[in-house]
Image 1: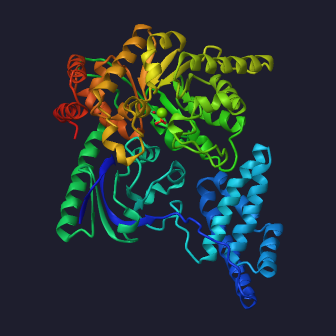
Image 2: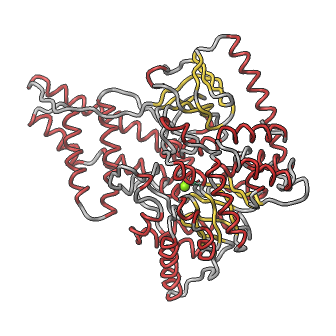
Image 3: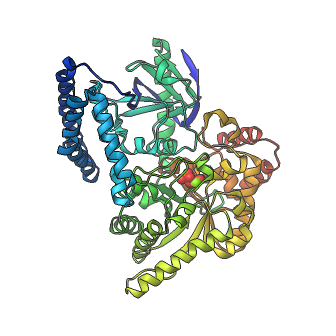
Amino acid sequence: MKYDVTVVSKGIALGKAYVYKPFVPDVTETIVDDANVEAELAIFDKALASAEVELNNLVDMVMKKDPDKAMIFEAHKAILKDDDICTDIKDSISGMKYSAEWAIMFVYNQNIEILSAVDDPLIKERVADLYDVRNRMLRCAKGLEEVTLASLKEQVVVVADDLFPSDTVVMDKEKVLGIITEKGGVTSHSAIIARGYGIPAVFGAKDPLNTIAMGQSVIVDAIEGAYILDPTAEETAEYTKKKDNFDNYYAETQKYLTKPAVTKDGVHIDIDINIGAPSDEALEPAAYTDGIGLIRSEFLYMDSGDKLPDEETQFQAYKKAIEAFGGKPVTLRTMDIGGDKQLPCLPLPKEDNPFLGKRALRLCLDRIDIFKTQLRAALRASAYGNLWIMFPMVGSIDDIRAGKAVVDEVKAELDSENIEYNKDVKIGIMVEVPSIGLMSDIAAQESDFCSIGSNDLIQYTTATDRINPEVTKYYQSYSPAVLRLIRFIVKNYNAAGKSACICGELGGDTLATAVLVGFGMRKLSMSASNIAGVKKLIANITIEEAEKLADEVCNMPTSDEVEARLKEFANAHGII
Ligand code: PEP
Ligand code: MG
Protein backbone atom coordinates (compact mmCIF):
# COMPACT_ATOMS: atom_id res chain seq x y z
CA MET A 1 0.00 0.00 0.00
CA LYS A 2 1.38 3.43 -1.01
CA TYR A 3 0.82 6.67 0.96
CA ASP A 4 1.62 10.25 -0.10
CA VAL A 5 3.81 12.36 2.13
CA THR A 6 6.12 15.38 1.94
CA VAL A 7 9.86 15.03 1.32
CA VAL A 8 12.16 16.63 3.85
CA SER A 9 15.43 14.95 2.94
CA LYS A 10 15.95 13.31 -0.46
CA GLY A 11 16.76 9.67 -1.09
CA ILE A 12 15.29 6.18 -1.10
CA ALA A 13 15.31 3.74 1.81
CA LEU A 14 14.17 0.14 2.07
CA GLY A 15 14.03 -1.59 5.44
CA LYS A 16 12.13 -2.65 8.52
CA ALA A 17 10.11 -0.13 10.52
CA TYR A 18 11.18 0.85 14.01
CA VAL A 19 8.13 2.43 15.60
CA TYR A 20 9.38 5.05 18.01
CA LYS A 21 6.81 5.56 20.72
CA PRO A 22 8.44 7.17 23.73
CA PHE A 23 6.84 5.97 26.97
CA VAL A 24 4.25 8.32 28.49
CA PRO A 25 3.31 7.39 32.07
CA ASP A 26 -0.37 7.07 32.83
CA VAL A 27 -0.78 6.23 36.52
CA THR A 28 -3.71 6.93 38.81
CA GLU A 29 -3.98 6.61 42.58
CA THR A 30 -4.37 2.91 43.37
CA ILE A 31 -4.70 1.35 46.84
CA VAL A 32 -4.09 -2.40 47.06
CA ASP A 33 -5.31 -5.05 49.51
CA ASP A 34 -3.05 -6.08 52.40
CA ALA A 35 -2.53 -9.39 50.65
CA ASN A 36 -0.96 -7.67 47.66
CA VAL A 37 1.54 -5.50 49.49
CA GLU A 38 4.36 -8.03 49.18
CA ALA A 39 3.72 -8.39 45.44
CA GLU A 40 3.85 -4.60 44.97
CA LEU A 41 7.10 -4.42 46.91
CA ALA A 42 8.46 -7.08 44.60
CA ILE A 43 7.36 -5.05 41.53
CA PHE A 44 9.26 -2.07 42.90
CA ASP A 45 12.41 -4.13 43.55
CA LYS A 46 12.25 -5.61 40.08
CA ALA A 47 11.73 -2.21 38.46
CA LEU A 48 14.69 -0.84 40.40
CA ALA A 49 16.91 -3.69 39.26
CA SER A 50 15.81 -3.40 35.59
CA ALA A 51 16.27 0.37 35.58
CA GLU A 52 19.76 -0.04 36.98
CA VAL A 53 20.69 -2.58 34.32
CA GLU A 54 19.37 -0.21 31.60
CA LEU A 55 21.34 2.71 32.97
CA ASN A 56 24.52 0.64 33.26
CA ASN A 57 24.10 -0.40 29.62
CA LEU A 58 23.50 3.19 28.55
CA VAL A 59 26.59 4.41 30.38
CA ASP A 60 28.71 1.70 28.74
CA MET A 61 27.34 2.44 25.30
CA VAL A 62 27.49 6.22 25.44
CA MET A 63 30.82 6.43 27.29
CA LYS A 64 32.78 5.46 24.17
CA LYS A 65 31.10 8.08 21.96
CA ASP A 66 30.40 10.87 24.40
CA PRO A 67 31.71 10.73 27.98
CA ASP A 68 29.78 13.91 28.94
CA LYS A 69 26.49 12.32 28.02
CA ALA A 70 27.46 9.24 30.00
CA MET A 71 27.74 11.43 33.09
CA ILE A 72 24.07 12.30 32.77
CA PHE A 73 23.16 8.64 33.06
CA GLU A 74 25.55 8.24 36.00
CA ALA A 75 23.63 11.04 37.70
CA HIS A 76 20.40 9.19 36.96
CA LYS A 77 21.80 6.09 38.63
CA ALA A 78 22.50 8.10 41.75
CA ILE A 79 18.90 9.35 41.84
CA LEU A 80 17.58 5.85 41.19
CA LYS A 81 19.42 4.46 44.18
CA ASP A 82 18.83 7.43 46.45
CA ASP A 83 18.14 5.96 49.93
CA ASP A 84 15.50 8.50 50.91
CA ILE A 85 13.53 8.08 47.71
CA CYS A 86 13.68 4.28 47.83
CA THR A 87 12.67 4.18 51.51
CA ASP A 88 9.79 6.59 50.93
CA ILE A 89 8.48 4.47 48.06
CA LYS A 90 8.66 1.27 50.09
CA ASP A 91 6.99 2.97 53.06
CA SER A 92 4.22 4.23 50.80
CA ILE A 93 3.60 0.71 49.58
CA SER A 94 3.72 -0.91 53.03
CA GLY A 95 2.08 1.88 55.03
CA MET A 96 -0.34 3.55 52.66
CA LYS A 97 -0.98 0.40 50.60
CA TYR A 98 -0.15 2.25 47.42
CA SER A 99 0.45 0.18 44.31
CA ALA A 100 4.14 0.17 43.30
CA GLU A 101 3.46 2.44 40.31
CA TRP A 102 1.45 4.92 42.31
CA ALA A 103 4.06 4.94 45.09
CA ILE A 104 6.81 5.70 42.54
CA MET A 105 4.74 8.43 40.95
CA PHE A 106 3.76 9.92 44.30
CA VAL A 107 7.23 10.00 45.85
CA TYR A 108 9.00 11.27 42.74
CA ASN A 109 6.35 13.94 42.22
CA GLN A 110 6.79 15.10 45.80
CA ASN A 111 10.52 15.51 45.22
CA ILE A 112 9.91 17.21 41.88
CA GLU A 113 7.55 19.65 43.53
CA ILE A 114 10.02 20.50 46.28
CA LEU A 115 12.94 21.06 43.87
CA SER A 116 10.81 23.05 41.43
CA ALA A 117 10.02 25.54 44.19
CA VAL A 118 13.68 26.24 45.02
CA ASP A 119 14.89 29.47 43.51
CA ASP A 120 18.25 28.18 42.38
CA PRO A 121 18.76 27.39 38.70
CA LEU A 122 21.21 24.60 39.47
CA ILE A 123 18.76 22.81 41.74
CA LYS A 124 15.92 23.40 39.30
CA GLU A 125 18.01 21.64 36.69
CA ARG A 126 17.75 18.41 38.71
CA VAL A 127 14.00 18.39 38.07
CA ALA A 128 14.42 17.16 34.50
CA ASP A 129 16.53 14.26 35.82
CA LEU A 130 13.89 13.32 38.36
CA TYR A 131 11.24 13.21 35.64
CA ASP A 132 13.48 11.06 33.52
CA VAL A 133 14.24 8.55 36.29
CA ARG A 134 10.61 8.51 37.41
CA ASN A 135 9.45 7.60 33.91
CA ARG A 136 12.13 4.95 33.56
CA MET A 137 11.00 3.37 36.85
CA LEU A 138 7.32 3.49 35.84
CA ARG A 139 8.08 1.85 32.51
CA CYS A 140 10.17 -0.83 34.15
CA ALA A 141 7.39 -1.41 36.68
CA LYS A 142 5.12 -2.16 33.73
CA GLY A 143 7.75 -4.49 32.32
CA LEU A 144 8.03 -2.47 29.11
CA GLU A 145 11.22 -2.28 27.08
CA GLU A 146 12.91 1.04 26.47
CA VAL A 147 12.31 2.62 23.07
CA THR A 148 15.17 4.98 22.28
CA LEU A 149 16.95 6.15 19.18
CA ALA A 150 20.26 6.12 21.04
CA SER A 151 20.63 2.36 21.08
CA LEU A 152 19.19 0.85 17.90
CA LYS A 153 20.24 -2.75 17.45
CA GLU A 154 20.04 -2.93 13.65
CA GLN A 155 19.51 -0.68 10.62
CA VAL A 156 15.89 0.50 10.53
CA VAL A 157 13.44 3.01 9.12
CA VAL A 158 12.39 5.16 12.08
CA VAL A 159 8.64 5.79 12.28
CA ALA A 160 7.56 8.48 14.72
CA ASP A 161 4.82 10.91 15.52
CA ASP A 162 7.41 13.67 15.65
CA LEU A 163 11.12 13.86 16.31
CA PHE A 164 12.50 16.54 18.53
CA PRO A 165 16.03 17.86 18.35
CA SER A 166 16.68 16.03 21.63
CA ASP A 167 15.76 12.75 19.90
CA THR A 168 17.88 13.37 16.84
CA VAL A 169 20.86 14.57 18.85
CA VAL A 170 21.22 11.14 20.51
CA MET A 171 20.10 9.20 17.43
CA ASP A 172 22.47 6.48 16.28
CA LYS A 173 22.55 7.80 12.72
CA GLU A 174 24.49 4.88 11.23
CA LYS A 175 21.50 2.70 12.00
CA VAL A 176 18.82 4.98 10.57
CA LEU A 177 18.06 4.17 6.93
CA GLY A 178 15.10 6.51 6.64
CA ILE A 179 12.58 8.50 8.66
CA ILE A 180 8.79 8.70 8.44
CA THR A 181 6.98 11.12 10.75
CA GLU A 182 3.51 12.52 11.09
CA LYS A 183 4.54 15.95 12.30
CA GLY A 184 7.49 18.09 11.38
CA GLY A 185 8.07 20.22 8.38
CA VAL A 186 10.68 20.91 5.76
CA THR A 187 12.37 23.40 8.06
CA SER A 188 11.73 21.75 11.40
CA HIS A 189 14.97 21.20 13.24
CA SER A 190 14.77 17.44 13.05
CA ALA A 191 14.36 17.73 9.25
CA ILE A 192 17.45 19.90 9.11
CA ILE A 193 19.35 17.27 11.05
CA ALA A 194 18.06 14.48 8.78
CA ARG A 195 19.30 16.41 5.75
CA GLY A 196 22.59 17.07 7.51
CA TYR A 197 23.09 13.32 7.89
CA GLY A 198 21.81 12.60 4.37
CA ILE A 199 19.02 10.37 5.75
CA PRO A 200 15.99 10.06 3.42
CA ALA A 201 13.05 11.51 5.35
CA VAL A 202 9.38 12.28 4.80
CA PHE A 203 6.66 13.73 6.99
CA GLY A 204 2.90 14.08 6.84
CA ALA A 205 2.17 10.36 7.38
CA LYS A 206 -1.33 9.78 8.73
CA ASP A 207 -1.27 8.26 12.22
CA PRO A 208 1.88 6.23 11.52
CA LEU A 209 2.23 4.94 15.10
CA ASN A 210 -1.01 3.03 14.75
CA THR A 211 -0.81 2.10 11.09
CA ILE A 212 2.77 0.89 10.84
CA ALA A 213 3.90 -2.07 12.93
CA MET A 214 7.29 -2.63 14.51
CA GLY A 215 9.36 -4.66 12.04
CA GLN A 216 6.97 -4.15 9.10
CA SER A 217 8.66 -3.85 5.69
CA VAL A 218 8.64 -0.35 4.33
CA ILE A 219 10.03 1.68 1.45
CA VAL A 220 10.60 5.40 1.86
CA ASP A 221 10.46 7.27 -1.43
CA ALA A 222 11.89 10.61 -0.38
CA ILE A 223 12.11 11.78 -3.99
CA GLU A 224 8.50 11.58 -5.10
CA GLY A 225 7.13 11.86 -1.55
CA ALA A 226 5.61 8.49 -0.63
CA TYR A 227 6.07 5.42 1.52
CA ILE A 228 5.00 1.89 0.77
CA LEU A 229 4.07 -0.70 3.38
CA ASP A 230 4.67 -4.41 2.75
CA PRO A 231 6.00 -3.78 -0.75
CA THR A 232 5.58 -6.49 -3.35
CA ALA A 233 8.62 -8.16 -4.91
CA GLU A 234 8.15 -5.95 -8.01
CA GLU A 235 8.01 -2.79 -5.92
CA THR A 236 11.10 -3.83 -4.00
CA ALA A 237 12.94 -4.43 -7.28
CA GLU A 238 11.71 -1.13 -8.75
CA TYR A 239 12.79 0.87 -5.70
CA THR A 240 16.10 -0.91 -5.35
CA LYS A 241 16.77 0.32 -8.91
CA LYS A 242 15.56 3.84 -8.06
CA LYS A 243 17.80 3.83 -5.03
CA ASP A 244 20.77 2.82 -7.22
CA ASN A 245 19.95 5.61 -9.71
CA PHE A 246 19.70 8.16 -6.94
CA ASP A 247 22.90 6.90 -5.37
CA ASN A 248 24.67 7.22 -8.77
CA TYR A 249 23.39 10.77 -9.29
CA TYR A 250 24.47 11.53 -5.76
CA ALA A 251 27.95 10.12 -6.37
CA GLU A 252 28.31 12.13 -9.58
CA THR A 253 27.22 15.31 -7.79
CA GLN A 254 29.65 14.64 -4.96
CA LYS A 255 32.51 15.28 -7.40
CA TYR A 256 31.78 18.98 -6.96
CA LEU A 257 32.07 18.83 -3.20
CA THR A 258 35.66 19.91 -2.82
CA LYS A 259 35.81 22.29 -5.80
CA PRO A 260 35.36 26.04 -5.35
CA ALA A 261 31.94 27.41 -6.34
CA VAL A 262 32.53 29.48 -9.46
CA THR A 263 29.94 30.42 -12.06
CA LYS A 264 30.55 29.73 -15.78
CA ASP A 265 31.56 33.37 -16.16
CA GLY A 266 34.05 33.22 -13.33
CA VAL A 267 32.26 34.73 -10.31
CA HIS A 268 33.17 33.06 -7.03
CA ILE A 269 30.38 32.44 -4.56
CA ASP A 270 31.36 31.79 -0.94
CA ILE A 271 29.93 28.52 0.31
CA ASP A 272 29.69 28.28 4.08
CA ILE A 273 28.35 25.54 6.31
CA ASN A 274 25.70 25.43 8.97
CA ILE A 275 26.60 23.36 12.02
CA GLY A 276 25.25 22.52 15.45
CA ALA A 277 27.82 21.78 18.13
CA PRO A 278 31.37 22.00 16.69
CA SER A 279 32.25 18.30 16.73
CA ASP A 280 35.20 16.96 14.70
CA GLU A 281 32.74 15.53 12.20
CA ALA A 282 30.83 18.81 11.83
CA LEU A 283 34.07 20.68 11.19
CA GLU A 284 35.32 18.32 8.48
CA PRO A 285 34.14 20.59 5.59
CA ALA A 286 36.64 23.26 6.73
CA ALA A 287 38.95 22.23 3.89
CA TYR A 288 36.46 22.91 1.10
CA THR A 289 34.17 25.65 2.39
CA ASP A 290 34.72 29.38 2.87
CA GLY A 291 33.63 29.58 6.48
CA ILE A 292 30.89 28.74 8.93
CA GLY A 293 27.80 30.75 8.10
CA LEU A 294 25.86 29.49 11.10
CA ILE A 295 26.74 27.78 14.34
CA ARG A 296 23.40 26.89 15.90
CA SER A 297 24.94 27.38 19.32
CA GLU A 298 21.84 26.19 21.14
CA PHE A 299 22.81 22.64 20.17
CA LEU A 300 25.68 22.98 22.61
CA TYR A 301 23.09 23.71 25.27
CA MET A 302 20.86 20.86 24.15
CA ASP A 303 23.81 18.49 24.31
CA SER A 304 24.77 19.52 27.78
CA GLY A 305 22.13 17.49 29.58
CA ASP A 306 20.98 18.70 32.93
CA LYS A 307 23.02 21.89 33.17
CA LEU A 308 23.78 24.89 31.01
CA PRO A 309 27.24 24.76 29.41
CA ASP A 310 29.60 26.96 31.40
CA GLU A 311 31.84 29.67 29.95
CA GLU A 312 34.89 27.45 29.66
CA THR A 313 33.00 24.67 27.86
CA GLN A 314 31.60 27.16 25.40
CA PHE A 315 34.94 28.91 24.95
CA GLN A 316 36.63 25.61 24.07
CA ALA A 317 33.88 24.71 21.60
CA TYR A 318 33.96 28.08 19.82
CA LYS A 319 37.76 28.18 19.77
CA LYS A 320 37.79 24.71 18.24
CA ALA A 321 35.53 25.85 15.39
CA ILE A 322 37.47 29.08 14.84
CA GLU A 323 40.82 27.30 14.76
CA ALA A 324 39.53 24.61 12.40
CA PHE A 325 38.68 27.33 9.89
CA GLY A 326 41.98 29.20 10.10
CA GLY A 327 41.30 32.82 9.15
CA LYS A 328 37.96 32.09 7.47
CA PRO A 329 34.85 33.71 8.98
CA VAL A 330 33.07 31.68 11.63
CA THR A 331 29.59 32.97 12.39
CA LEU A 332 28.34 32.18 15.84
CA ARG A 333 24.65 32.65 16.33
CA THR A 334 23.86 33.38 19.95
CA MET A 335 21.49 30.98 21.68
CA ASP A 336 18.18 30.48 19.88
CA ILE A 337 16.02 28.66 22.43
CA GLY A 338 12.24 28.80 22.31
CA GLY A 339 9.98 27.95 19.37
CA ASP A 340 10.47 24.21 18.78
CA LYS A 341 13.78 24.13 20.67
CA GLN A 342 13.53 23.59 24.41
CA LEU A 343 16.17 22.81 26.98
CA PRO A 344 15.60 20.22 29.72
CA CYS A 345 17.90 22.33 31.89
CA LEU A 346 16.05 25.59 31.30
CA PRO A 347 12.35 24.96 31.81
CA LEU A 348 10.41 27.89 30.36
CA PRO A 349 6.83 28.89 31.03
CA LYS A 350 4.44 27.41 28.50
CA GLU A 351 3.44 29.90 25.83
CA ASP A 352 0.41 29.75 23.55
CA ASN A 353 2.50 30.85 20.56
CA PRO A 354 6.11 29.92 21.31
CA PHE A 355 7.35 30.94 17.84
CA LEU A 356 5.96 34.41 18.55
CA GLY A 357 7.06 34.46 22.15
CA LYS A 358 10.13 34.88 24.27
CA ARG A 359 12.48 33.18 21.86
CA ALA A 360 16.18 33.62 21.00
CA LEU A 361 17.45 37.19 21.49
CA ARG A 362 14.29 38.05 23.43
CA LEU A 363 15.05 35.30 25.92
CA CYS A 364 18.73 36.27 26.05
CA LEU A 365 17.88 39.90 26.80
CA ASP A 366 15.70 38.63 29.62
CA ARG A 367 18.31 36.18 30.93
CA ILE A 368 21.34 38.45 30.73
CA ASP A 369 23.30 36.01 32.92
CA ILE A 370 23.05 33.28 30.27
CA PHE A 371 23.63 35.74 27.43
CA LYS A 372 26.71 37.27 29.03
CA THR A 373 28.26 33.88 29.74
CA GLN A 374 27.91 33.04 26.07
CA LEU A 375 29.25 36.39 24.90
CA ARG A 376 32.24 36.16 27.25
CA ALA A 377 33.07 32.73 25.86
CA ALA A 378 32.60 33.96 22.29
CA LEU A 379 34.67 37.11 22.71
CA ARG A 380 37.49 35.21 24.39
CA ALA A 381 37.44 32.74 21.49
CA SER A 382 37.52 35.64 18.99
CA ALA A 383 41.21 36.11 19.81
CA TYR A 384 41.93 32.86 17.94
CA GLY A 385 40.69 33.72 14.44
CA ASN A 386 37.89 35.37 12.52
CA LEU A 387 34.75 35.20 14.65
CA TRP A 388 31.50 36.93 13.66
CA ILE A 389 28.75 37.12 16.27
CA MET A 390 25.14 37.06 15.10
CA PHE A 391 21.85 37.67 16.96
CA PRO A 392 18.78 35.56 16.08
CA MET A 393 15.15 36.75 16.01
CA VAL A 394 15.98 40.41 15.62
CA GLY A 395 12.75 42.34 15.01
CA SER A 396 13.77 45.96 15.29
CA ILE A 397 16.64 48.40 15.43
CA ASP A 398 16.01 48.46 19.22
CA ASP A 399 16.91 44.77 19.31
CA ILE A 400 20.17 45.39 17.46
CA ARG A 401 21.09 48.17 19.84
CA ALA A 402 20.11 46.15 22.92
CA GLY A 403 22.18 43.16 21.80
CA LYS A 404 25.18 45.32 20.96
CA ALA A 405 24.92 47.09 24.32
CA VAL A 406 25.35 43.77 26.11
CA VAL A 407 28.33 42.94 23.89
CA ASP A 408 29.86 46.30 24.87
CA GLU A 409 29.29 45.57 28.56
CA VAL A 410 31.00 42.21 28.22
CA LYS A 411 33.88 43.80 26.30
CA ALA A 412 34.31 46.33 29.12
CA GLU A 413 34.38 43.51 31.68
CA LEU A 414 37.01 41.65 29.69
CA ASP A 415 39.04 44.86 29.34
CA SER A 416 38.96 45.39 33.08
CA GLU A 417 40.19 41.81 33.59
CA ASN A 418 42.89 42.21 30.91
CA ILE A 419 41.44 39.31 28.94
CA GLU A 420 42.24 39.26 25.25
CA TYR A 421 39.63 39.34 22.49
CA ASN A 422 39.29 40.72 18.97
CA LYS A 423 38.20 44.33 19.44
CA ASP A 424 36.85 44.47 15.86
CA VAL A 425 34.74 41.34 16.07
CA LYS A 426 31.86 41.71 13.61
CA ILE A 427 28.36 41.91 15.03
CA GLY A 428 25.56 40.95 12.70
CA ILE A 429 21.95 39.89 12.65
CA MET A 430 19.74 37.15 11.35
CA VAL A 431 17.06 38.62 9.15
CA GLU A 432 14.20 36.25 9.84
CA VAL A 433 11.48 38.62 10.99
CA PRO A 434 9.90 40.68 8.20
CA SER A 435 9.94 43.87 10.27
CA ILE A 436 13.74 43.99 10.28
CA GLY A 437 13.83 42.98 6.61
CA LEU A 438 11.74 46.02 5.82
CA MET A 439 14.18 48.15 7.85
CA SER A 440 17.23 46.57 6.27
CA ASP A 441 18.56 49.87 4.85
CA ILE A 442 18.95 51.17 8.41
CA ALA A 443 19.82 47.76 9.87
CA ALA A 444 22.71 47.63 7.40
CA GLN A 445 24.08 50.81 8.99
CA GLU A 446 23.79 49.40 12.50
CA SER A 447 25.16 45.91 11.93
CA ASP A 448 28.29 44.56 10.25
CA PHE A 449 26.55 41.82 8.27
CA CYS A 450 23.31 39.93 7.95
CA SER A 451 22.26 36.40 7.28
CA ILE A 452 18.79 35.63 6.09
CA GLY A 453 17.03 32.99 8.17
CA SER A 454 14.65 31.92 5.45
CA ASN A 455 13.07 29.19 7.56
CA ASP A 456 11.65 31.73 9.94
CA LEU A 457 11.37 34.51 7.38
CA ILE A 458 8.95 32.34 5.38
CA GLN A 459 7.12 31.38 8.58
CA TYR A 460 6.69 34.96 9.74
CA THR A 461 6.03 36.49 6.31
CA THR A 462 3.37 33.96 5.37
CA ALA A 463 2.02 33.65 8.95
CA THR A 464 2.45 29.87 8.83
CA ASP A 465 3.75 27.67 11.65
CA ARG A 466 6.82 26.00 10.15
CA ILE A 467 6.21 22.68 11.94
CA ASN A 468 2.44 22.33 11.68
CA PRO A 469 1.57 19.75 8.97
CA GLU A 470 -1.98 21.10 8.79
CA VAL A 471 -0.72 24.28 7.16
CA THR A 472 2.14 22.95 5.06
CA LYS A 473 0.62 24.24 1.84
CA TYR A 474 0.68 27.76 3.27
CA TYR A 475 4.36 27.49 4.14
CA GLN A 476 5.42 28.54 0.67
CA SER A 477 9.18 28.31 0.31
CA TYR A 478 9.11 29.94 -3.10
CA SER A 479 6.57 32.61 -2.25
CA PRO A 480 7.23 35.59 -4.54
CA ALA A 481 6.52 37.80 -1.51
CA VAL A 482 9.40 36.23 0.40
CA LEU A 483 11.65 36.39 -2.66
CA ARG A 484 10.93 40.09 -3.10
CA LEU A 485 11.75 40.67 0.55
CA ILE A 486 15.03 38.77 0.23
CA ARG A 487 15.89 40.81 -2.90
CA PHE A 488 15.25 44.01 -0.93
CA ILE A 489 17.45 42.91 1.98
CA VAL A 490 20.35 41.86 -0.25
CA LYS A 491 20.15 45.12 -2.18
CA ASN A 492 20.34 47.16 1.04
CA TYR A 493 23.26 45.27 2.54
CA ASN A 494 25.13 45.25 -0.78
CA ALA A 495 24.57 49.01 -1.08
CA ALA A 496 26.09 49.49 2.38
CA GLY A 497 29.06 47.33 1.39
CA LYS A 498 28.13 44.76 4.05
CA SER A 499 27.89 41.02 3.59
CA ALA A 500 24.43 39.50 3.11
CA CYS A 501 24.33 35.72 3.43
CA ILE A 502 21.50 33.23 3.77
CA CYS A 503 21.62 30.37 6.26
CA GLY A 504 18.03 29.10 6.19
CA GLU A 505 17.23 25.97 4.19
CA LEU A 506 16.75 28.02 1.01
CA GLY A 507 20.49 28.68 1.15
CA GLY A 508 21.16 25.01 0.42
CA ASP A 509 18.23 24.45 -1.89
CA THR A 510 19.41 23.96 -5.45
CA LEU A 511 16.09 25.29 -6.72
CA ALA A 512 16.79 28.64 -5.05
CA THR A 513 20.54 28.96 -5.66
CA ALA A 514 20.40 30.75 -9.02
CA VAL A 515 17.77 33.21 -7.80
CA LEU A 516 19.82 34.12 -4.73
CA VAL A 517 22.92 34.65 -6.85
CA GLY A 518 20.76 36.65 -9.26
CA PHE A 519 19.75 38.94 -6.37
CA GLY A 520 23.43 39.72 -5.84
CA MET A 521 24.11 37.36 -2.96
CA ARG A 522 27.72 36.16 -2.96
CA LYS A 523 27.66 33.98 0.13
CA LEU A 524 25.38 31.03 0.86
CA SER A 525 25.44 28.89 3.98
CA MET A 526 23.98 25.41 4.18
CA SER A 527 24.07 21.94 5.73
CA ALA A 528 27.09 19.92 4.65
CA SER A 529 24.88 17.54 2.67
CA ASN A 530 23.79 20.36 0.31
CA ILE A 531 27.22 21.68 -0.61
CA ALA A 532 27.96 19.44 -3.59
CA GLY A 533 24.61 20.07 -5.28
CA VAL A 534 24.78 23.83 -4.83
CA LYS A 535 28.37 23.97 -6.14
CA LYS A 536 27.32 21.88 -9.13
CA LEU A 537 24.48 24.24 -9.98
CA ILE A 538 26.71 27.31 -9.62
CA ALA A 539 29.28 25.74 -11.94
CA ASN A 540 26.55 25.41 -14.58
CA ILE A 541 25.13 28.96 -14.61
CA THR A 542 26.18 32.48 -15.57
CA ILE A 543 25.40 35.62 -13.56
CA GLU A 544 23.33 36.96 -16.44
CA GLU A 545 21.16 33.83 -16.49
CA ALA A 546 20.76 34.03 -12.72
CA GLU A 547 19.73 37.70 -12.79
CA LYS A 548 17.21 37.02 -15.52
CA LEU A 549 15.70 34.13 -13.60
CA ALA A 550 15.57 36.20 -10.39
CA ASP A 551 13.65 38.99 -12.15
CA GLU A 552 11.34 36.52 -13.82
CA VAL A 553 10.28 34.69 -10.64
CA CYS A 554 9.80 37.87 -8.60
CA ASN A 555 7.17 38.86 -11.14
CA MET A 556 5.29 35.57 -10.98
CA PRO A 557 2.00 35.48 -9.08
CA THR A 558 2.24 32.22 -7.09
CA SER A 559 4.72 30.03 -5.26
CA ASP A 560 3.69 26.99 -7.32
CA GLU A 561 4.47 28.77 -10.57
CA VAL A 562 7.81 29.89 -9.21
CA GLU A 563 8.61 26.37 -8.05
CA ALA A 564 7.73 24.84 -11.41
CA ARG A 565 9.97 27.35 -13.20
CA LEU A 566 12.82 26.76 -10.74
CA LYS A 567 12.55 22.98 -11.21
CA GLU A 568 12.72 23.44 -14.96
CA PHE A 569 15.76 25.69 -14.60
CA ALA A 570 17.56 23.37 -12.19
CA ASN A 571 16.88 20.29 -14.33
CA ALA A 572 18.28 22.09 -17.33
CA HIS A 573 21.42 22.73 -15.28
CA GLY A 574 22.18 19.20 -14.10
CA ILE A 575 20.09 18.92 -10.91
CA ILE A 576 17.31 16.42 -10.17
C1 PEP B 1 16.22 30.20 9.90
O1 PEP B 1 15.24 30.57 10.54
O2 PEP B 1 16.25 30.18 8.66
C2 PEP B 1 17.42 29.74 10.59
C3 PEP B 1 18.55 29.50 9.97
O3 PEP B 1 17.30 29.53 11.92
P1 PEP B 1 16.61 28.24 12.58
O4 PEP B 1 16.22 27.32 11.46
O5 PEP B 1 17.61 27.64 13.50
O6 PEP B 1 15.44 28.84 13.27
MG1 MG C 1 15.48 30.93 12.64
